[in-house]
Amino acid sequence: MDSASQFAVLNDPLSNQGTAFTEEQRYSFGLEGLLPSGVDTLERQIERVLGQLEAKPNDLERYVYLQDLVERNQTLFYATLMSDPARFIPIVYDPTIADACLGYGHLFRRPQGMYLNKRMKNHFATVLKNWPNKEVRFICVTSGGRILGLGDIGVNGAPIPIGKLQLYTACAGVPPEVLLPIHLDIGTSNAALRADPLYLGLREAPPTPDEVDSIVDAFMEAANEVFPGVCVHFEDWKGSDAIRLLHRYQDKYLVYNDDIQGTASVALAGLITALQIKKEALSDQRILFAGAGSAGIGIANMMVEAMVQQGLGEAEARTKITMFDENGLLITSRKDLSESQKVYARQDKPMRRLEDAVKHVKPTILIGVSTVGGLFTEGVVKAMYAKCDRPIIFPLSNPTDHAEATAEQIYKWTNGAALVAAGVQFDDVMMNAKKFHPGQANNFYIFPAVGMAVYATRPKRITDATFIAAAHGSADQVSQSDRKHGMLFPRQDSILETEITTAARVAEFIFDQGDATVERPEDIRAWIESMVYNPKYSA
Image (tube, rainbow, N blue to C red):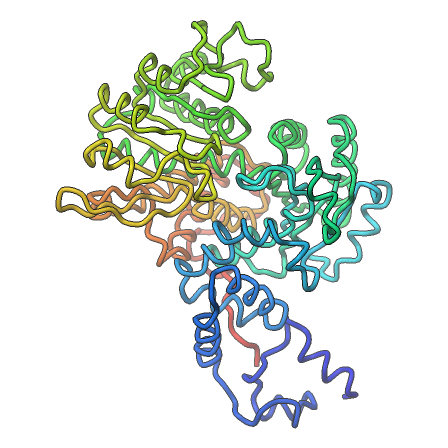
């Protein structure tokens, strides 16, 4: 073996084992003298990684370290993440990834995934063929048009699909080699970024919606040509683009949008648990949304479908939902509503204050997807509590400073009566000699499990009903003892076990619907377990 090949082994994150190469392997690969004499186990390497992480001053530095690690030794990276998912999910994804996105052009070290732009429109297929692995089963693609609560940050949103796909593996065991993160650069409306000399994206404003559709049409055609049967996961597109593109492709390709369907599914999972605690039906609730963008509309649509499954007509189910945005209640006299918003417009008088809307609607469920930090004021929460003994309140916006209220505030203002889930993980709260553990309505409970089910069953389509099945699969795993502490989602310390259980539930649904393109096994769970990625070094 020549010296170039020897160093290629050490520099390839898929084959590199670092100090875990055995003496026999070092001899066979010509690595003798290129590594210290000691031979580590994978467990000892993890111990070293944990020590180095502990020495970092903050989670952003830990994020940077871990992204360097995955580019050096993929097996060690995933073995570390999967050793303690509850600890590492907030580092490799939300909330730390928000800081990584904001500083992306300044933190950039080496490329991860692929970077396409609108100028490649006529040769997307040629560009995609540059990816070395030809067996891609999932693409997570973003334009960076609406990242978390950060708005349009263009190519600075590239860490999002990288982090999302890392959670496919860390949380549900989807093999990493079948995953491809992509940033599709259509420009950015963020003038400050375009003026930043270290910004790495196109320094142009985004095109018109028709031009966006044409670009994404070309991308979808090329992706399915190069990777037949690939599932495309749309992530963090501008709200109007997100809704339109999902409708455009969901009957033609294998696609889903996590901001719309994943967010809706995890919110529904929390509501299912909360309503089981209250022993009430979703169809009997009055639901008020603060925020009527793609996430809010997606949650509302999935709630309607869930209520239809319970026996309500679609029109009646929609009457249970009221929506409020920056211009007030969505009412039929407003002229600024999109087509997806109009179906939730009420024949009512204008209201511009959320507290007034709460007093008027008397909601039993209040969902925040506004990205307006502090929107759920003491007056808002107390007005809801005055008409509902056990209000369900979900401030889902993230990162933390965009949350509509903190869990501690909501518990305080309702004397501990509220059932709470947020988009970020808030600390436990002690009230009245009782510890409350607020839930985190994080999509990682849903999309990795759906991904594993899709990986296993190779379905013809993914529908909202698929995500409703995932919501039930998650909710059913919250123990009675955890529910007594206000927990609405399963514990994160056993997330792999949880996600495999949910994936089996989703796979069963896909088979029942006749959408799978593989033969149904006798034992679905055991079948899925046999496919789970196990981060171990090869012999």
